[in-house]
Amino acid sequence: MPHALMELFPTSLRHVLEQVPDHTMDTLEEIRIRENRPLEISYGSRFSFVRSDGTLTDDYREAYVPGREDCRALLERVTNHSIYAVEEELRRGYVTVAGGHRIGLAGRTVLDNGIVSHLRDIAGFNVRMARARIGFGAQVLPGLLDFKSKTIRHTLIISPPQQGKTTLIRDLARCLSSGEWHHSAAQGWGGRKVGIIDERSEIAASEKGVPTFDLGPRCDVLDACPKAEGIMMMVRSLSPEIIVVDEIGRPEDAAALNEAIHAGVRVLATAHAADLSDVFARPVLAKLASEGVFGAYVLLNRAAGKVEHRVVLAEDAAVEASRRYRPAIGAAPRDAPWGQAIQSSNSVAPLPALVTVKARPMPAIRSPNEQISSGGGADHA
Image (tube, rainbow, N blue to C red; front, top):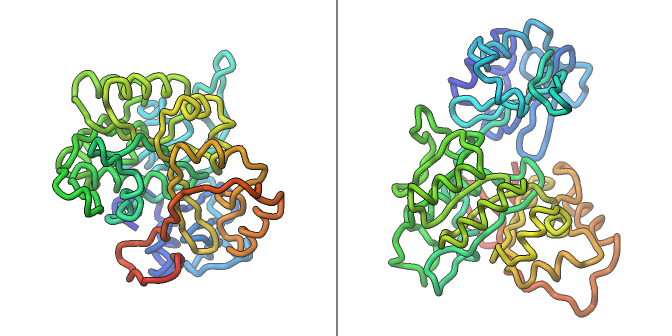
């Protein structure tokens, strides 16, 4: 865990977390702190409770229990001792801290004319780790290329939460900005001007306007800017060739994306969805998809220590979405046995005999620090 993030925790919590085994901390994804309830962490495709000596347990009754003072002190550190300074973030239910780490908040909502104005009595925190994985996008990018235009197709990356969308889109932005196309037919294309609208400060993790993650040499970032407004600002003033935006889904997002596309800008976006059926079931995404906005979809899946992805081109997406079954993508908890996830998805209804999906099978997403073998597709935590 980065030292600056560890320093956010009050002394009692820091003492517990510092004793967690190194191999667990290396794959740490979430720390869940709930007042008067057991301390929990998520790492790889597993979760465990944490004892007061830093050892892990599956029995929540043995875990360290953060108290009110722990949570109060953590909230003060996260908000830099000024809740009013992060009032907008509290309204949205999270605060992003230095390094791009997002801290989700749970508590009592305060309404103003039926709309959430802010949170109070905050007693739950979900600290989500942000990590750059250089090379993460290398196996995905070749399937997204538009060889005629020498750039990428308009692309939507979809998965349920905590599957790696932001990590993938960050590395794809770096590849596009650097001209690392990872395809022999794209040699000599050069890098593209990439514009990132980083509404939650997670993609670039900018500090005083300067990205702390490597996004390549030809990248501009609008930090903490609403997506719809940022897309139009980017098109008008920074002449991007590719716009990168995370978690679209509102009508104003769709309108801005359409404006960018008709201005000759390519779009790389993410959205929460379990599979293509969900994309076509969500009104905003369905409208974009039915209008043929996206030329390719990337589906991410994590289960039982495995991470996989595949590319579905636009002409095959509607066919797949119309099937009367739920694909394995997002169909089972991440810690479910892999075989069980596949079996459960296929047991709903058989595949239509005459329908095939031409999507190129994609290898597993692997950490750049791991040795890649010629077979298999598993990424074990």
